[in-house]
Length: 148
Image (tube, rainbow, N blue to C red; front, side, top):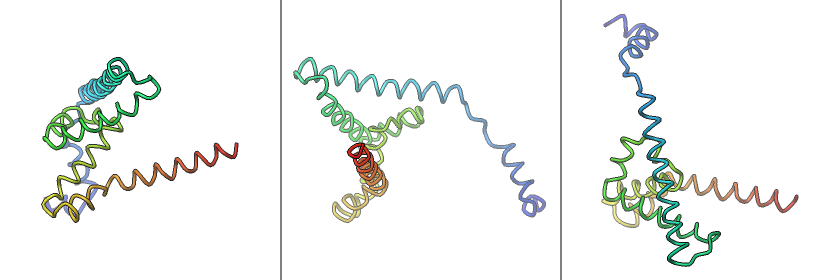
């Protein structure tokens, strides 16, 4: 044991030997199935907006995105999203659902500090950087588009 504490390379070799091997095939399959299921659900919701609410196809994406964000936030608040993510891994990181999960998770974590200082200020810890990046990128792309 003393040798392992003195020799970081020996410790690292032992740690790598004891580390569980990832189940790559299972992880890939679950991510594909759950991510594909989320996208299929989104397409189904979009088709409902087009067929039953008479949205034109080019405008049906807006309420579809809002609905998927609402469902993801609700499932996060109920504790269901985390259970799905535990088995699906990266499959739940489909951008809209993953983003909604990160905001709601942060808000729930700090709700005991109150609505303003807890939920209101802490829910954008992760989302704030994403929003800033999106706004700056949209500005740069818009500027380049206008100049060309």
